[in-house]
Image 1 (cartoon, rainbow, N blue to C red):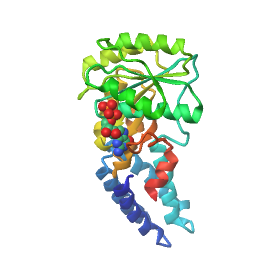
Image 2: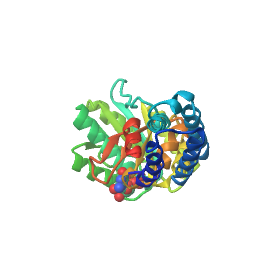
Image 3: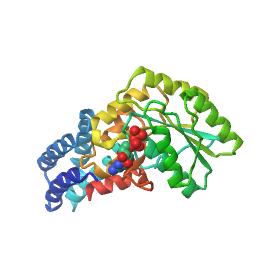
Image 4: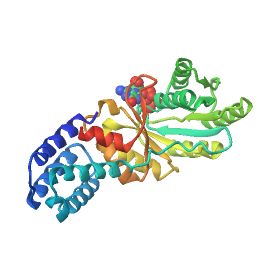
Length: 297
Ligand code: GDP
């Protein structure tokens, strides 16, 4: 995860750490390399600028350069700034504080990993929090999408709403709410339809479903491998619905980290989960400090 970014930054900081004394110019040279590393990692330009400016400002403070271990102190400043950029010190929890069934609506483009993430999060809530969970697929566009969720439900031991052919998403949402209430479900996961591109029909459908189910959480699923595109998609969705968080999938294959590092600053939305593989337990709560530690090795 984030290997190429990690290697690049590691090279810069090894040089800094190895030196006894540091001059302002050394810090500026190092920050020039950090800037290039972040841009190559596909981090959004304004985020890169702010990052480098803030680190430079703190690092050339006299107390840092005059200290016994200036290199290490600069690395600490970078670490703190990475955590801040990734979302800060607090881990964003799912907000399930509503009367049941609490609805979590999953949105995103086709192929982003939405259905997989729906099942992974359901399993997590069932196994780790002891919640009674039901999943319902509202995806009537992609053939076999509803069937896919049913199979994942069987794999994970999470109930799914029975499929009735020919129903529209809003009808399925209504039926899912009724079933969840009747069966005293704690959390209802709604897997909405995705499309290849952001379009108005997708947004309208999503809003209609939200109107029926009043989700407590609306999680956008985006593919980390698409870098800044993932951030652009998030901005489009955030302009239409009240997103409460992001699920960043395929972090296992992402050597660069640009989506993770840009998401919070550009969209203001916290990354709540990271997908780390195809298996049903390959999902992690997104801890900014742990991710920063991984990047700095
Ligand atoms: P959807 O169209 O958005 O519902 O996408 P799917 O959930 O069907 O996922 C598309 C593909 O991506 C599937 O083959 C998943 O196994 C795979 N996938 C989803 N999340 C991850 C992840 O975090 N890591 C990896 N490596 N593969 C993933």
